[in-house]
Length: 248
Image 1: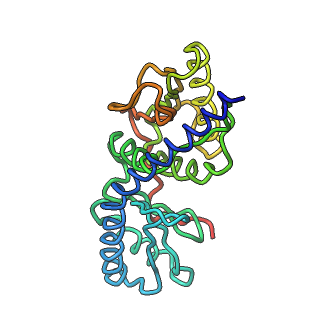
Image 2: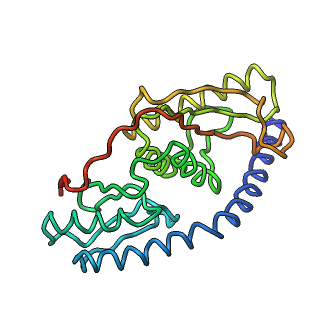
């Protein structure tokens, strides 16, 4: 029991330090990028004749994103909605676009992104937050469900690529157990993405135990307990054309 308590304390302290450092670094660029895209979107909306429309470049939890959510266009015709979405999609740095009242998608400048772009998007999400599991288990903590929603959204533009999910642990405990747990946790994340619409044939899981610690960290540092994603280039699935109306 004492060992478990020490492990829990180490995880809590290590995670807090990593999150604090990551938030400080991410906060320096993410909000500025979102603010810049938002200002450019306002101009694009006005020029496209979609005055009631607003583009939100933050997630439901307030995190900056390149995937805008459009709202306020319920009274507009489909042609105007499509024109607005195209105008916003032409802004450099904007990825796929969603309407709050439907599923119309628009090609952004990176709507069919290089696999590295998807990988960077996911890495950015996980830089400040972590997919948590119940202690000593592969069951994903309920608090991580929203983060998994965002990871799925970031990976969706790269459907058609092979997405690798790798589980890591720290070096505490016997390595055979670490290896098995890292694999189970990677499988749990894969299953969570399947439930969010990511196709099974594009997901590959593996677990490496404690063999690949974070650069600069001791192998037994709790921050080594993590999930990493890698996107391998293949032929991407074409996104839905911007002028295909979505259900409302």
